[in-house]
Amino acid sequence: MSGDKPAMPKGSFGHTIKAVAWSFLGIRKSSEFQEDIGRLNPFHLIAVGIVGALIFVVSLIALVNWIVAK
Image 1: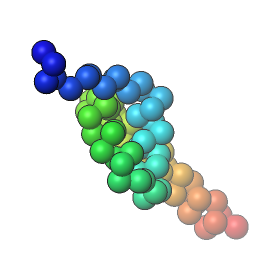
Image 2: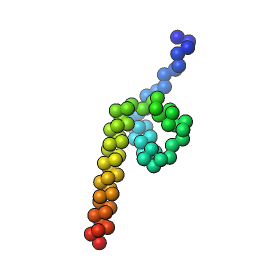
Image 3: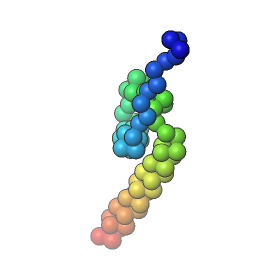
């Protein structure tokens, strides 16, 4: 087993939230992106991505309604 790579520790849900938030902003280092690919749970990524998109859309709708109401 000397040729096996050491297993990377799994990313936590909080780490997933942080990675998705940076992705929404478009600010990621290539090296950090590569680490995240191997570490993060795909189901967590999908869930956090959907929730983040919903929060973004609801925020935009609220902002537009607030501006139009004035």
